[in-house]
Length: 224
Image (tube, rainbow, N blue to C red; front, side, top):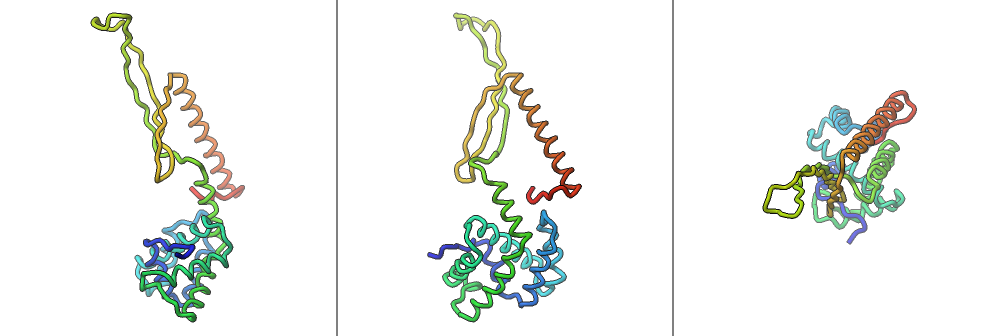
């Protein structure tokens, strides 16, 4: 089994790359190189349509999807570009998809040249690293809900109406990863809720300040 497995959803995009001429490959690379982070998927597709006029919009979308995916795969694998290209070509040789599979040495050499051009684009490498850092956490937030309930308070005799009630509120957090989501229940009183609101509002204000600095060219936001 090859070290790299091409995702099924990206096989069509790889097949489109295989059909590109050297000129088309260079123009695709130039479009990405001239992109300003954060690189917008829809902007890239729109920029490529007049260049790759022989391809349908769907083919161009598959092409862009495949390029993005390969950058993320390389970032996750943490190997050199030379090793990644070798793994990619090995995956192509062993693929069951006849659109991309080849063992022809000349074809593989051409493909290696195309992929080297497409996979050494600095803005995309930076985007892939930002994507990896953005999700580099043990757990990821999924959802939140506050459950409110009324709990009766009895003295001793539960056959008579309760003396009163207490209001209880529980913060339900859903977190984890795609394969193993978890749930955490935290009891919260009124002060706790006010504190959480304050912390979240402060987080919003911090983000707004950082985004305003980004607009003043102090830094670039690479991943939303």
